[in-house]
Length: 166
Image (cartoon, rainbow, N blue to C red; front, top):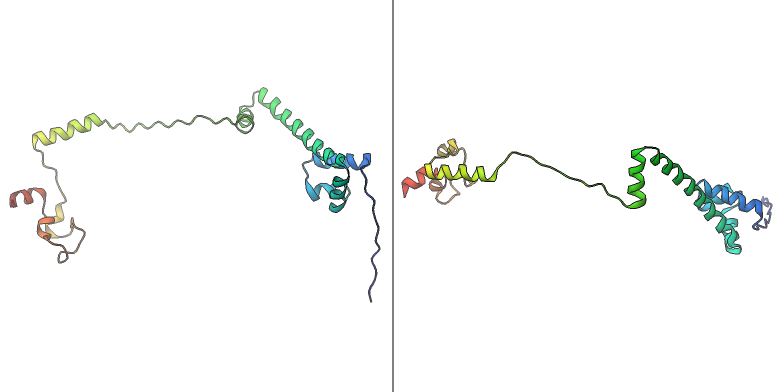
C-alpha cells in the first residue's frame, strides 16, 4: 500500500531574518550546502534564493569578509604585541615573504693544499700502496672472472709490476 508524503511548498524570499541567518552561517566559515542548512534552508532553496535575489549572496560574502577581518585583526594585534611566530606567518602568507636560507659548509678541505701534496708525491716519487690482494686474484680490477678477461695478468698487476714488464 502506498502512503502519500505530505508536500509542503515553502516560499523562500530574502527576508531580514533569512539574510541574518545566512550572514551568521557564512561568518562561521560555512559554504554551500552546509551554509544553507545552518541558515535553516534546504540547499535547493538557498540556490533558488541566490538566483532570485542578489542580497542572499551578498549576505554570505559579507559574513565571510567580516570573519576574515576579525581574525586578521587578532593576528595583527598578536604580531604587534611581540609574537614573533605570528609575525612570521603573516609575512609568509599575506606578503609572500620567504626567509633567506643560507647553508655554510666548512669541511676543512683546501684545494691548494691538496694540489701541493699531490705535487710532492709526484716529485718525490712516492709509491701509493695499491690493493694488496690483487696478485692472488681476490680483487680483480676488471670486475670479470680470470678466464673471461683479455690480458688478465696485465690488468690485474700493480702499477709497479706493469712498468717493470715494459
